[in-house]
Length: 70
Ligand SMILES: [Zn+2]
Image (cartoon, rainbow, N blue to C red; front, side, top):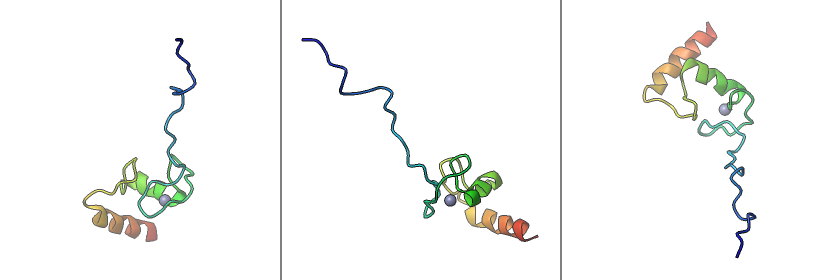
């Protein structure tokens, strides 16, 4: 019996939701997979590519907000 190639398509990649990966955000991703604000977070090192926060996130956020306000 010949194998049918209908079942699993190798090109059918798991598609991640096209939203900002930062926890509690879920906004539409605009830049590099992040929303506008969290893209800035990513640039500032507040979150990594996956949207995960580092252990010293609070400190980093404070200095980030201080810079932003300046
Ligand atoms: Zn976001």
